[in-house]
Image (tube, rainbow, N blue to C red; front, top):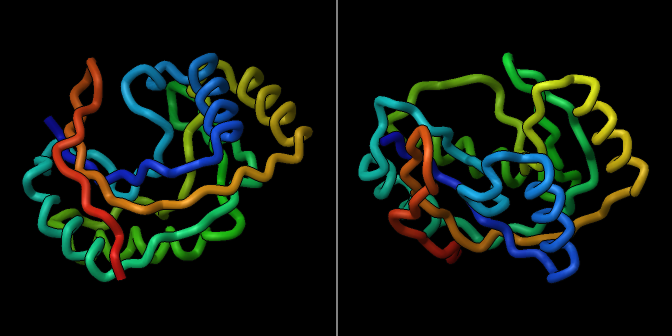
Length: 170
């Protein structure tokens, strides 16, 4: 099982329902894990236990973060195409949080980090573009907060299991 660090955002009830409804319809992982920002991605060489110390240390030094999801981005990673909701406000704070977690963790540097919540994973690029256009047309403004870091175990199938959560405190 691979370990990862995620942040489950808090939304207003109407916004939570909106995000989760889109995910239920378009993202096969919606049943495995609630809407989240992945801050340290799963790596088969890293176990959840390896991430507990870094998550706790960074959480102690970090204040809760506010964000607003406004942008819709289509991201292709073969064989699938994803639709992401990306924050405007709070974007840089989430990037800094990711950078601090990576500096404290045993993981090597990966691809450039884009804070996002995945709302769709589709096999068709055209379907992803159509969904993204529809969502962008709604002029989304989904405010939320990140108040904790969660270390999770990710398997190939089945639910993602939270090992421990650390409230942001600074």
